[in-house]
Amino acid sequence: MPKRILVGTVVSDKTDKTVVVKVERKVKHPLYGKIIRRSKKYHAHDEANAFKTGETVRIEETAPISKLKTWKVIDRVQAGKGTAIEADV
Image (cartoon, rainbow, N blue to C red; front, side, top):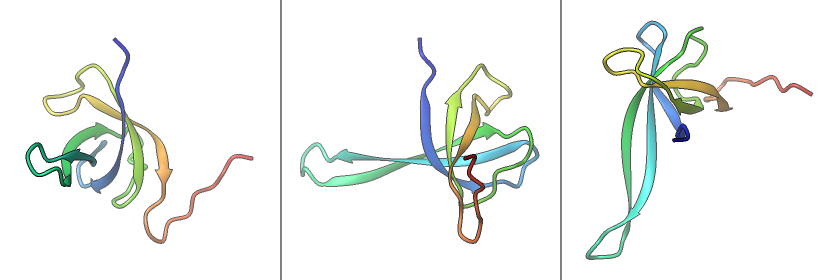
């Protein structure tokens, strides 16, 4: 089975080597048809403590690392406010 990859926003980086990533999705209400946002938080492994709150990151499913962590951060999609990203050209 292929590994799932999700994109979300880092909402907490307080724990060592771990970030909490909030992933939002849009679903249609079954009765009323309105598009509503649903979100879920994932604990992801960040070995170098490189990712900060507010950044948009890509996470990948892995084998369990701890009780809560079964995801790891692959890369940064977009920096948070006031943070610059260096591009490899």
